[in-house]
Each structure stands twice: as structure tokens, then as C-alpha cells.
Length: 361
Image (tube, rainbow, N blue to C red; front, side, top):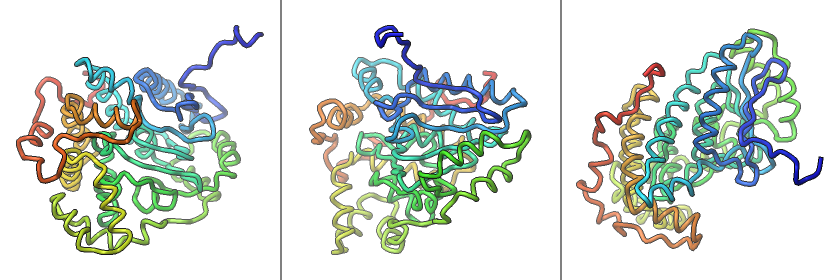
């Protein structure tokens, strides 16, 4: 077969290998950024794997060497937002429902969170029952830099991280390495990337009907045992700076501290959307009181629809993805200019458009 006549591989590969149902994100040139159609294919694959008694576990992986997934198809969302389209409403609804399903999937669901794992990739992996990171993992939720907030259940996960580590990661968008992802509650085990192929082979040979405990025991045989990284080592300072419920107070706490880390953190926050930071902080504080992932996803969906209509989202994507000048002009430009009237619509109930998790509806 000639190169010109070769059939391109699909963006999502779902297949059985031994006793494992494999889900492979297959857009390596885009670091496996996920599209609406990919979410739909994953949903369909899970239907089949759940019903197949020969499938003992699910394994999520990413094609290529760069990472599991760099997030969602931000460019498509940007184009739809510009013309008042409805891609955000449709995509986030289906994505968030899928995130909730993964969290409650009845069979062990293993995620290989190797390399870059961001945004939508976190939603597909960090809610699974067995979350494997490596020495190459760079996990981040950098959405505030796009005029957005950590979604896909990110507020639920971040709010449950020790101390204020989740507040720090959610507002700064700084990446976690593998051990810090374990410390923050986004992962369960660090496995050397050189051992992933061996672990993968072992997972495809798990006995029929293997329990979650059986799968954990298997994975534990490959782990390094690391449970905290460089950011966790700064926990005491981070807890002091980010313990506040207002962005103005967090900024003031950082300004009072002359340390190099405090000043670097201030600089990072200064690059983010002021409105996005205020919305994120409130979502994180509300998530601490939430009784379930679904409750947080409902709140995130309401806020996401408002983001989709905002100039900040389009400006953030323009600066980071479209023009790549890294010079967004936020509206409003400063924390002190973010009023309660601006924020209220992000937290309002949305009637008939509310997110529903009953798959029969």
C-alpha cells in the first residue's frame, strides 16, 4: 500500500487486549487533545467494555511520547464562542457527564498519566480508580490563564488536596510532577516510565473478575513509593499565603513576603485573568462544602457557560493559542475591578440547561 492510499488511524482507538479494554487517545501531533467526537467514542467504548464479561479492567493511555493529553480542543471552542455557537454547551455537557461516569465505573479503570496531562486529560484520568504517574508527568490545570477555571471536576479534586496546595495549583496553573500529583490527590502511584510497558503487559493479563484491590496490588509492584515532590516541600508557606477567601488577601499575603517563591508566585498570578481567579477561588471554596463530584460538575457547568460568553475567554485563547503573543488584555484588568455583579452570573442556576447525570434522560 502506498503512503497516499494508507488509511489514517482514528483519533480514538478502543480495543480489547487480553483482559483489558484499551482506550488510546490517538492525536499525538496535538498531544492527544480531545474533541467532542472523541468523548462520544469513549462513552461508546465504555458501554461495550462494561457489558463484556471478558474485560476485567479499562486502561487509558495516550499515543506518542509527549503525554497522555494536553486538554480539550480549545481552538474549536474559541471559534464557536466568537460566532455565538453552542459547542461549549454541548461539549462540556457530554464531557462532564463522562467524567462522572469514569469516577463510578464498575470495573477497575487504570490511567497512564505519563508526560503532559492537562485540562480535559485530567478529567479522563484523575477520576479513575487507579491513577499512575511517572518521572515524566507534568500535570496541570492552567485554565485561569485562558480566562477560564479548572473544570472537568478539577474544583472537586483541588478542594480536597492537603492544606492550600489545591488553591495554589488551581490559581497559578503551575504543573505538578508525579510525586506532587500523588500528594495533591490527583494520582495514586509513581511508576518509572521505563517500566510502563511491562506494567501494561501485566494489566492485559489480569485474571477474569479481578478486583480493584487485585489491580492495586499489581501496580504497587512497579511503584517507586514516592508520595510528595518539590511543591509539597513548600506546603507551609503555600498554606499561609493561600488560606484566604478573597484574591485581594492572597495577593497581599504574597506581597508581604519577600521570598523568591512568593515573588515568583505573584508574577505568575499577575499574568492570569483577574475575573478567572476570583471565579476559581469561589468555586474552590464552594467545592470544599460539596458532598459529591457531581455537585461540583453542576456548578462548573453553570460557570463554564458564562465563561463561553465572555470576552476574557476569547482573549485568553487568542493570546495563548491563536496569536501566541502571550499578552492578553483582561477585562477587567485588575483584581480590584472585579465586582460581585460580574461574578454573580457564573453561579446562577440555568433552568432547562442544567447538567443532569441520569443517562436515561
